[in-house]
Image 1 (cartoon, rainbow, N blue to C red):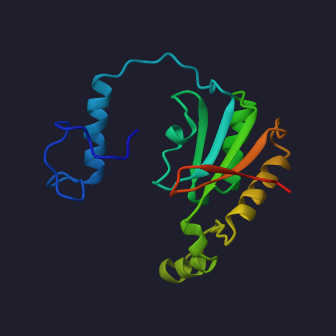
Image 2 (cartoon, helix red, strand yellow):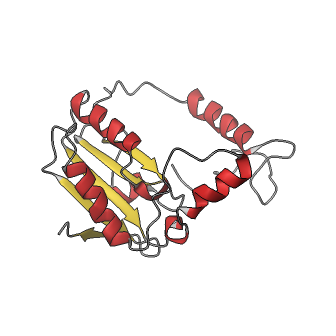
Amino acid sequence: MSTSASPTGSLPAEPADGIAAGGTVTDRLIEANQRYAAGFTDPGMDARPVLGVAVVACMDARIDLHAALGLDLGDCHTIRNAGGVVTDDVMRSLTISQRALGTRSVVLIHHTKCGLESLTEEFRHELELEVGQRPGWAVEAFRDVEQDVRQSMQRVRTSPFLLHTDDVRGFVFDVTTGLLREIDPA
């Protein structure tokens, strides 16, 4: 999926913010889906990833994960969240990916200039003051992206729920060059 403007003629003229006059971003997405579905044919794929890999990455909008890794539809399971952090829910997804759908490899991708580098756990306290309830989740903020990748690799490698922890590798994606840099787990 491209992050650039839509092809010429596919959408009516729009304001600079990309939202059709009188519509919302969600309306735009639904319109795009209707055009997509009009030409859609069932690829006949199984839910099992062709390459047997699960990729855990940050949700950052600057990362076109499939393009960056040369992946096609059906190649991998993609699990994304803020920071690409290995949380309980990520472990849930990885466990299902391995045990029910046959993946054997895990690739972890964090990135430079991540928003979590500027947050702290104080964010949770601020939310509690604002809404009257403390979130049940941790922010998982960090200052050292490489150390955070190592921590994520360790969480995956020591999980009792995963069958395959021998091929777990971690990387930092540089948002200015597009290159991945592998992180030594030591």
